[in-house]
Image 1 (cartoon, rainbow, N blue to C red):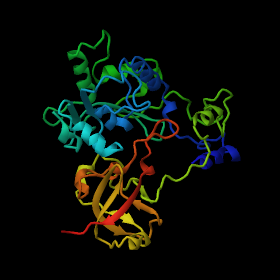
Image 2 (tube, one colour; image 1 turned 180 degrees about the horizontal axis):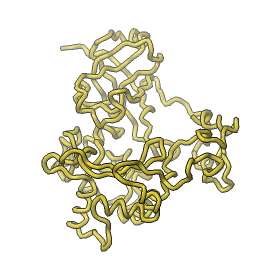
Image 3 (spheres, rainbow, N blue to C red; image 1 turned 180 degrees about the vertical axis):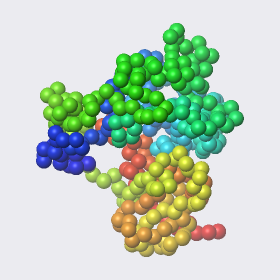
Image 4 (cartoon, rainbow, N blue to C red; image 1 turned 90 degrees about the vertical axis):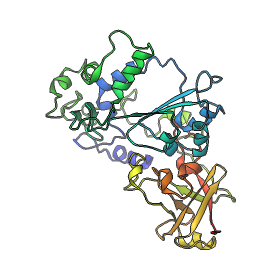
Length: 371
């Protein structure tokens, strides 16, 4: 990835529309960025890294999982825009945490997710077809104002309406807080006259970042000297082993296989997992399968110290030897055990950014002999 991103810099592919590179276009929306900074300026509560959700719910706090109030147990969890039992690493620990009798769990959802089965209260949420929304383009410099085209089902409500009501009932609202979609949009765009004036339901609007953002013409890196740094010193110092250092494969003699849990055309995320009803097999190279006496279609067990998954085997010569594949985004009904690849994924952090290390999972596989 770093080599690919370095190519435009090394070859000087800048100064023309479409030249250069970007990992994100979020910087093209200064108004929205400023509004988010204001909204997040007063956290007032502990900060929890979702990758350690299981241990936080169980009170097994280690290192920097949370940054404040380590001794205070989590007594209430409000889940929205997420299906943590299907998406968080160390899945079995998350399941144990959600199963706590003294944990009050609210799930604000559009579908009956795996997480919703552990809820004390399920609140219906609207889909994007049923509420007003202001949406940024994904990979394009566009902002849309979206209007509903369907009536909300039953008592379903959008996020902004439910959160405003929570603030009011908990006595946390403040005078002048924006209300409703129009008020929220006005608050976000209060300093962006052109964007605000252009934004309507008939056409998209373009943020105020130049008529045609061109790198090294009217858009520059946020580095002190406005130049590209192939090895940013600050990041290189922050990474425990340096940005470009080699690290040994975490495989062991006991767990020699690398479990990759990438997306597929059906499971780019867990959002539509309820629609995919089939049992999803583990893909394994024929040579790895032969060494373990596994045949195509066999019931198999994939396991490590964190948990296990039972499903069917699919032999595929397209797999690299030593690597097995079970997609991300699966729900409990997609395997024979009700667990997914996340049951085998460690909740360790990446060396930068404290992200998840899903593909660091190392496993073993064996045939399950039917009784």
